[in-house]
Image (cartoon, rainbow, N blue to C red):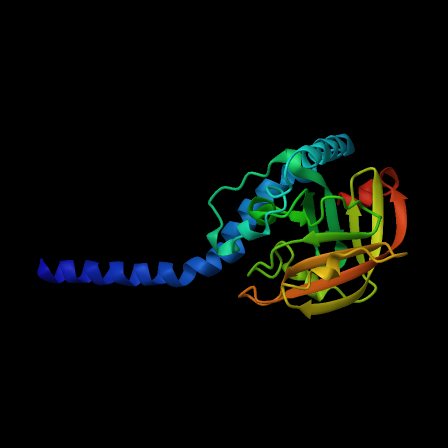
Length: 232
């Protein structure tokens, strides 16, 4: 009897140890990608009319209320604290970003805060527009190298970065990348005479620095003419 209890206790200790060891890899590579993928699927299928209605509503909200709720950088937490269920508020969706070379296809949501960055990519300035000025987007560097903005460090010079509101398709080509300190907010400023896209994400796992990917606008296409390619 006593030997049986000792054996069962030993088995439970071993199982507990295995769970503790395997939980983080399982969460990073299976659970989190599945949860986030489910949350993104419906948002990616929204129409131009949906995105335009959302954009107009959010712009009016910004004009009449404080921007702090939408652009609350201080609320952003590590993906380690990812909840079991993530729901994306469709009313914040304004477009998609695609980077074919690194298999990125994600929803663009208005604002940068904890909820938007857990399940998509957030705009960094209240007045930015696709194809104009410096269109700046922030996303998490997940511990899973294929999730959210983790793959952007692998974009090669000249490769395409595509953003769309499903009316027009804005095609940029990467021209530069750099790693900077978090206080380098100038990287998202507009540059006179240039139409840019800037992608921002943590570079190191501890969030102590940022990787900045910059692309230049090279073409603007009608969405209907390339929808089949983009929706594959």
